[in-house]
Image (cartoon, rainbow, N blue to C red; front, side):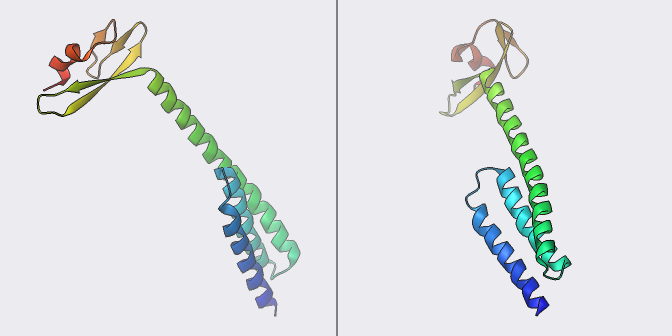
Length: 137
């Protein structure tokens, strides 16, 4: 009978976790729910189906899952901020080649001018005609 209770608690915890994760917006929320489900299952197994073990496992798992997921959210936010800053400090110039293809040249803003991919300096944003001899074909 105790084995049935433990197995039932484990299945219920995992099923509820699966249903709830679908609606999560952040990795912190998902981590908390997954951690709670896994913790409840482990707690149920460790305590042989006693409710106290299931609840303690759910609490510890949920807290741990939230911390891990929240750190993943922070890392993703830092990466998005860094990408936005890089885009704001650069300019793209399309070079139309003789074979019909297009070469994209990324220039990085530096002080009052721009630096090209090969390290060349421009005191202004160069036009396609100025870049074509270097990057076009």
